[in-house]
Structures are given as C-alpha cells and as structure tokens.
Image (cartoon, rainbow, N blue to C red; front, side, top):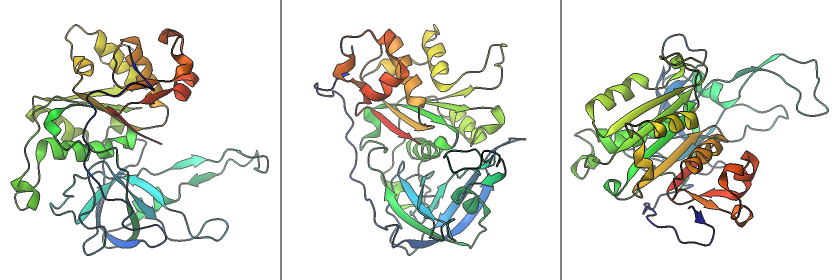
Length: 341
C-alpha cells in the first residue's frame, strides 16, 4: 500500500536550486524593521505579529525562495553572559518579497508568556514566576527603523516545485506554521506587483490547492480575512479551518487538523479527494507531532505515496501502529514536506 524504504518514489517533485547560508550567524547582516502589525483578530489570547524587515543592500537581498527560513540574533546576552544564539523564523513572503524585488521579507513571530516549570533537578519546584521568550518577544517589540541581525537563507526542501502546474497542493498548518503558506499562496495565486522583474514570467497556478489551518480558537486564525478573500476569488483554492477548543457550528466537538481531514475524507462531497491523486504534494508546517495524526489518518484511509514504511512495521497492519512506532519507523517521501518545531 505504501512506499517502503527500498522502493523508488514515483511522481517526486522537481525542486529548484536554492541559496543557503549566504549570511552566517557568526557574521550576520543588519536589516531594519519596515513594518509591524498584529495579524490575529478580535480578542485572541495570543499575540502574533506580521513583521517586515528591509534587507536592501545586504548580502541577503534577493536570495530567498518562498518556504525557506532565516535567522534572527536578538540583542543582549543570556543568563550566562553570552550573546544570544540565533533563532530561525519561517519566511512569510513570496520569492520576490513584500516589495517585488526581494528587498523586504516578512515573518510571523508569536510572543511567549508562560509560568516557569521545573525541568531539571536544580530548578526550584516552587518557582512559578512569569517568564517571556527571548527572541520572539524582542522581535515583536521592535519599531520601524530598528536594526535586526539576520542570517540565512535556511532550508532547501520546503519550497515549491519548478513547475507549479505539475502538482496539486495540500497545505497543513498550525498556528504560526501558516507563515510559509502565505508566501506560497501569494506565489501560486496572487503574483508579483506589476513593477516587479518577476511579473513578466509569472503565471497563475491552475492546480487544486487546499489549505487546512489548525488553531485553538477562531480568534487565533492568522491572515484569516485575506485567505478567505483569496478563496472567494480563486475557485481552485479551498480553505478549511480546524478549531480544536471550540464547538463547531453544528454543535459537534472541536477538532485538530488530522481530525478535520478524516471527517472530510468521509464526506460524500469528495472535497479532499485530491489527496488520492498522485499529482498531489503535502506540506506540513507547525507543531512537532502533528505529522503523526496526519500519517495515521492517511493510513486509515489507505492513501499512499506520502510515507516510507520502515521494515520494523512492514508486516504489521497499520491499524495496530502506535504513535511512537510511527515517529520511529515512518518517514515522509519526496511528496511530503515537513517543517515542524
């Protein structure tokens, strides 16, 4: 049913050559904040910002492809007096950037605010003081004109194929994992501005595109208005939301991304049947572990082409596989790209 470790992979996408590590963390370039704004809606308990960074004149200008990531080195030192280490952020822009020339890039940092919990024997079990994350909070605090040290690009597989029309796309995101898919959708459907050098060769993708966005509450949906407008304009683009901690409109319980896929695969409308096509590519971005539920759902519906099964599971019915066995022995094929953290 499913590709094993020893079998060739049919219909693997042809991916473009990408540039990587043009600027290293130990020799970063300096960009400047061009714009910053909240990208949640209503009274969300999360604080996620759309942050644009101007890299004009640096070694990073024009080097990124949609789907890659870049490093941010925040100012200051850690608890040991050493400079902070680099943190990676997914690019939320198309290849031509926010400006059409690859001179302004964007990402979606989420503020971290939490109570301390003991993780090591030396930690005080009574310390439940509030702490904030280092880099994302720092980046969210920046104002237009502020300097930011950057490295990158990073990543070579989580990119669109050289011929976008050769494939269908199934994009699965949780939370800030939507970032690269904003860039993908701009690249596949919206196109560059008229003044961009990329405008002369760009062609709108006619293939089917499905996006499943998973969040805890509806107010946590990122870029939601823009994505809904995009779905209204393009009949080949289909937007699905999986809200885990709110009841659905029909009164049923909330659901996670894999549960949304499972439910819609059972739907007689066939709205997710493109998963069965050997043209389809799956991209997964978000919380580590979400791929386990997705793989289990694909196995349940006997959908193949996206996983390699290790020999340890070769003779065991997939219905008996545990989540831990899937983590150890199931690997994505070249038609399934993972970017989880």
